[in-house]
Length: 216
Image 1 (cartoon, rainbow, N blue to C red):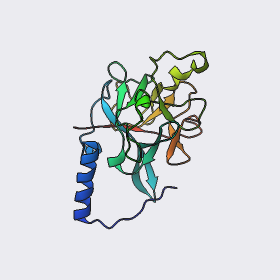
Image 2 (cartoon, rainbow, N blue to C red):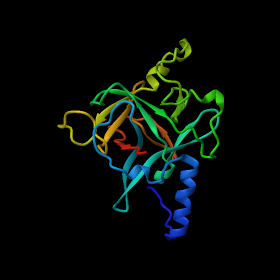
Image 3 (cartoon, rainbow, N blue to C red):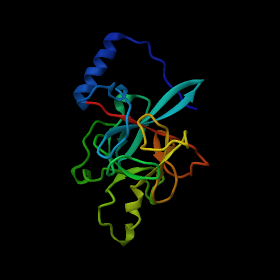
């Protein structure tokens, strides 16, 4: 299903790539590979990745930078250095069946351009009724008019454990979870790659994610 290009590793080019990414983003392209343990809490800065299989081998899909247009549509990437960081919006630890917000703190597009100033407050990931693809909009604290009264729930995401259902306590880093949209009850999943959607429930498409710690 997924295709990856094969590259011959060349030390000098890899070193240059790492330095370039650090200059552009202020963080190492290996930031997603630091110690990934403990409970996920409100205020934590994280990446989201999905563990998949291709030809019997593990591969990871990350939520990456946005495709700019009328809205900012997040895309997916196999390159951890291109993953965007989210701030987890909740008070305290995340427990099963808690709702969280996902606020991007990397407001960059694929073209490396900054978001337009008028869109800087549109930083909450949501599934809205006017689009199949997920995009960024204002958070649940924004006062929407009657036309957009369901938008507040569109940026809320319910967290459910996907693997060890007998487990109790806070959600942990590196634990498989379903991320379910608060408006329509469908899960965060791939859509017309490289985009994302929430069009199907977990029985139709049991797509899971892991919280990955973003390290300084």
